[in-house]
View 1 (cartoon, rainbow, N blue to C red):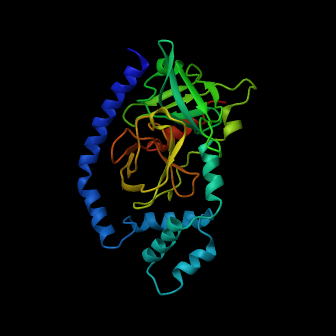
View 2: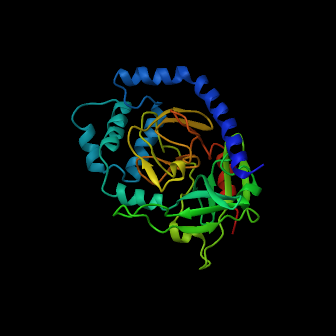
View 3: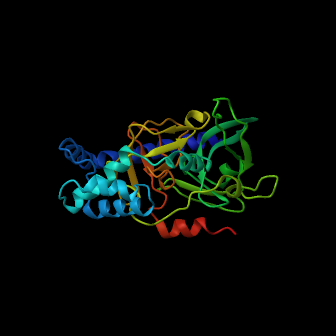
Amino acid sequence: MAVTDRSREQRAHQLVAAAARYGATTEERRAVERQRDAGVAFPDSRDALAARAARLLDQQAVPAAMAVEAVRAEPLSAPAAYERILGVSKELQAWSFLPRGAQAARTVARISVRERGRELPVGTGFLVSPQLLLTNHHVLPDADAARQGIVEFEAQVTVDNTPQAPTRLQLDPDAFFTADERLDFALVRVAPGPDGRPPGGTFGWNRLSARPGKLVIGEPVNVVGHPMGRLKEIAVRDNMLQVRLDDFLHYRTDTEPGNSGSPVYNVEGTEHVGGGPPHTRCAVAGRPFGRRDRVLRTARAPS
């Protein structure tokens, strides 16, 4: 079976699984919406809100002076204070949000496969170590599919909206490849460029982290990818985490086929919080560090 046919077959399988999870969490989403309608901006647990507020302050995503200004006007309970800090981060960003986001976007690549004399785009991936690219299992179902793969970094437009020449690199699954069908992720080595440098040395990479506090329900997310195989695009409006499961995140955003394997970032613009979704109106992201210890060890494996 051709790579694109296997990819479509796996994608259909993942859509069925995603729809089942979506249906099973209907009451959770309704409860979230009821709380939001009642004025609760971030209907998450107290511990989750505390961890998120602490992380924002620790990483200076919310300046301390702004946080003080947000909470000093009146006596507040701890959860209310956390929500005020999160509200500031949702509405206003430090200038560094833009260059940090651009830096993170450099790690994102379009994935195509060679098939019948053509190169066909099948999804998106992003670097999680100097040599390893993370994407969806349904994009690269196995090592044989990855052997036909090509990744293009900086397949995008310039600041003048003219196409930029991408950097094309080969995948090297014989050196490293692992995948998990249930969690819908694949991790594969990218071969060095002609200069011998690993791709992360040129484009950077996203450091996987098991630390809590990366995202709370109601918070916006940002998606970077290659919908329909087009040049790189971003989704930064009307995106929100809706439900958090043990191994998956449910979030609302506009995506298309080709976004599969895209990184999903929080408002800090540098932390990866989920994997790219199958195309659904309310996208469901495979959470690649649901099995945190195993995936983090795997990502560090190649020398």
